[in-house]
Structures are given as structure tokens and as C-alpha cells.
Length: 394
Image 1 (cartoon, rainbow, N blue to C red):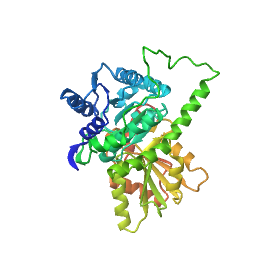
Image 2: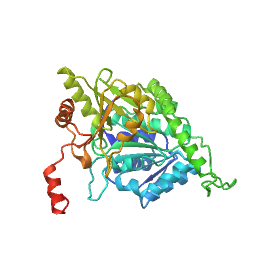
Image 3: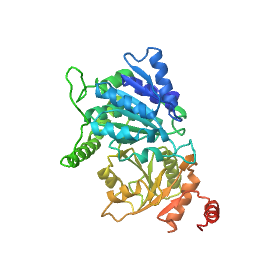
Image 4: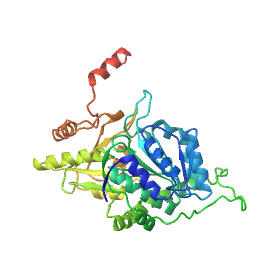
């Protein structure tokens, strides 16, 4: 049953129905509503057997999740922005140890300067830390992805990061259907860990590995992570049968015959869909392809979705200073050998709205051959030029 509910509250309900045994929490905007709601449920006795840990930092939050998972507990935490960066060392330890922790990242910009609004600089900065990364287009997907995330993590003994655009989704109130407890129980069996630390049967994990074997360790990690693409497809099909909610690693929209395609990730997908509908009514074929699975990168599915396009415009809510787009190099590599031009538009940094009018201008310029390989959407060139001139860099 659909109910009007805040995105964060819906995510918390979905996580609760996955029956976590340890939730480690440290507040940071805009994820705080999620762990606040979970804390209230634990206090009210609604999460039987779950221990809620209020820790002193994000480093401690991920460390507590690592320890809990290593002794066999289903573990969950959430963070954003600099909080994710503070976890970075432990993120690598969790993936290196093959521990199926689930983490929500309520996407937010990274300072300096301080900015609490949405972009995806935080999770994109950790794209190569060995975790599966899933991105939600909307709040229904955010809810469903968390349930799938626990099953995916525990199926492969890999950690999973579910990325939800901060404020745009986490604080939006809209009709959302959270799967019932019976549905979640039917989809997600009790956690059976592949490895458990037990004082009565002591073993060492994460020990020193020298040059003779470290490359092999990384190769095993890579190949295990690649397996997640196939397992994600299998699990989402099973999930759709149980709930009627369908998820895909790559989702085409009006893209079958489109020569120009917007490639999106996260909540900007809805704006792109609306624009594609308007353009279709005007007789213009512009498609949209959205990415839900970003790590591992879904090469085969993306090639299949884009094989008929002549131009792909990648909308990115993060960028690599001195280089360009973060996602674009992966897209170009995936499309190797296909006659497709790939361009990058950096959009929505620090919470700047990404409007249909601005995207329409991008598409008009692309049609007229005026779109650069790299563009910053709605950039105030005069401000940039003045600042560079003041610094003697014009």
C-alpha cells in the first residue's frame, strides 16, 4: 500500500524490515533522519534483537559495522559527504575482508567551501573502494534497493553502498510503498555469514599479505565484484515477482530509436524523462538511459541500451578537477568500437537545480553542433572570469 512518507523515513522502514542486528549511527546532514527513525524504532522495541550504537564519528560507525559483521551480525549504517570521507580507510577494510555491510549514502557535496546540498561528489570519490554502488532514481527505488542490497551483499559476501540524492530524495514526501515484513522475509533469509570471528575458535583475518600474493587478492576481489552484476539481475527479477517493483542495472526510456541519449544517474533521471516526453510531443526523439548499478560497471547492458545512438550526453553530478567527468571515461570504455560520440555535462553541483529548460538548451546546442566535449551547466562565466583575473590567471 502506498503512503505519503518522507524518503528517509521510508528507507528506515525498509532497513528495519531487513532485520539488522547492529545499527551504528553518527549524525550528518542529510542522512540523519534515517538513523533517527531507526533509533526510535529500536527504543520502542520494534526491532527485536537489534543493538543501536551511538558512536563518536563516522570512522567509528564503519568500524563498529565491520566488527559486528565479522562476528556474524547483519550490520547497517548511513552517512554523507565528509562523513563518507572519514570512513574511507575502513571502507577498504570492509571490502578487503569481504564483509557484507550495507551503507546508505545520502549524497551531498564535499567542501571546502562548505556546502550541505546535493551532488554526488562523496560517493563518486569512493567508487573504487571495492563496494557495490547502487544509485536510486527516486524514493521508491531507494526503498527497494535497500532490501535488494542486503540480499546481494550476503549472497556474495561483499559490502553494498546505496546512494540516495540528499534532500532531493531524502527529504521529499511522496507516495511510496515499503514492502511488507512477509515480503521482505520471503526475499531475504536470515544472515548466514561465510566467515565468523569466534573467541572459542580463533582465526586471523586481514593479515599481512606480501608481494607474492597481494595482486591475486585484488584479482579475486575484482572478479567477485564483477559477479555482482549477474546476481543483481537475478535478485531484482525475484524481487519484482514478490513485490511488483522492478529494478534494473540500466534503464532505457524512449531510447530505442533515439539518436541522442541523455545518460543519467540518480534523481535527475525524472527531469530527463519529463523533458524526453515533451520533446517527443514536438516530434524530437531524445532518449534517456539511467544507471542504477555503477560498481561493477554494467558494460554489456549499457552497450545494449546505447547501441543505436549517435551521441550520448553524460549528465554528471560530480567531476574530477583537472580531468572532467567521473562517469564519462567508463562510458567511453564501455562503448569502445561503436560509432558514438560521448560528451559530458557537469550539472547540479552543490545543489544547483537541474531544470528542463537548461537541459533543453544543451540538447538544442547538441543538435546544432555547438555542444562542447565538456560543459558546466548554467555556468556563470563572468564570475569565473573575474575570479581568475583577480588571481592573475586570466
